[in-house]
Length: 363
Image: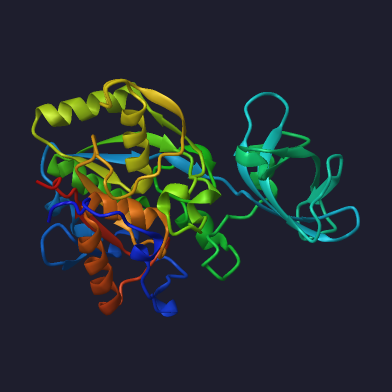
């Protein structure tokens, strides 16, 4: 199944009809009990996620994203009493307690406005000052909090569930919309392919001789941003912060030397690794990298690092559909999605997963 890079794809090529009832609203009772669509060969094979160790080989290397989802959704009100909702996209470095956030209100708050967060009100909460607009393209609001932002979010914020999950966040979500190895706070969406891993599965992978390492990519709300132009070249990706440490570069070199494959646990791990390669002189992952990435992966992209991908099922016409199609081949991925719908797999963040090999380049 060679990569189909001989034609130019448009937005419509990544569309499909999904029955609404297949959008998972809650996680499976056990993380590793989710279904796994094995899409490595010509024909799909239906499996269970806990079978993963048998599908990998000793000396393979799993790369996880260790970002931690913050309680980024805030409910509150303006001085006029009007409702306001904020989604903190990024906590800015420095001592100023400043953040960049999406703000939804009947009228956009002006600089100098004080917003009261900590719903339901009245009650203990905090005031945030609107400093102006900021972020890429000036589309976010620049806010100043009265104290350390992550602490305030943990106390007053809500789990930022994706827009297609229709229920309010609950204690179950605080645990299950978080990986078991989440360490570095900063994401407003979970690296969902890694939600299927639990302690028992990680132990089984280690016993199999599969090594693991970490990258960090703080997933932004832009992961749900729709593509609005048929010409993919006109789409501008949101920017996210990532880090590939030296220990991961060394782990990849060891795996390669031992004949192992690099297996990305999720599209965010893949984007971090491939971004690091793209940003390194020569296009090879030979050194640690950190910074911003707006890498937009579409069919025709030349992967340098990742050999195999574990990923959930993604939204129609999304940038993640394009990434997965670039990795495994557009026709192959669309056929797998057709099978998943027929077989009643669960879709999106709380849904099931698939396992893909990188398609060989065309001859």
